[in-house]
Amino acid sequence: MLTALNSAQSQLLQQLRDIHPPEAVNWWPLATGWWIIIGLIALIALLLLIRFLLKRHHYRFVRFASAELHQLRKSDDPRWLAKSHNVMRRLGLCYVDEELAGSMNQQQWMQFLQDTQGQQLSNETIAVFVDLPYKPATASDDVDKDSVMRDIINWAEQLPEQVKEYTQRRQEEHHHV
Image 1: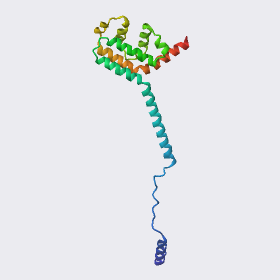
Image 2 (image 1 turned 90 degrees about the vertical axis):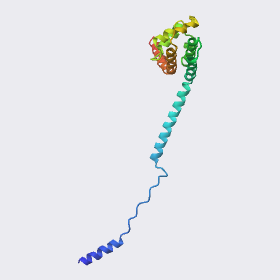
Image 3 (image 1 turned 90 degrees about the horizontal axis):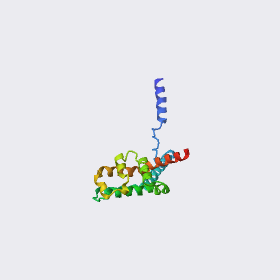
């Protein structure tokens, strides 16, 4: 009986085929899910690039003003304070509504500086600009040039963001009145 069982088992074993591994799965063409992920990554990258380019374009005036202010900081020009004030005015015209910025008198300009100063302009720096158009060129001799220029450059670099907040506040005030 044992031999009959062994012969039946050996016949069954002979009918078995060798184990064949499945075919290798190719990585190409990609499955639909991968195409969706690649498309989303490309879309996000494109949106980030567009945002970067728009922000860079929006800040171009800041770059020009900052370069001019850095030159004034290094120069020995006795009119550096008036010239830096002029750069600030021009930069303000680039980011604030032209009708508003173009018609500002000295008092309104000083209020604008206080409203857009954030943490950039110290009270000492703002005080330097009070009645600046009427001061002699030697008025800048008593001023700490490095400190004032550092404040002005920081103010200039933050102006676009500060103007957004300033404009929103003005619109809210205008709607409440």
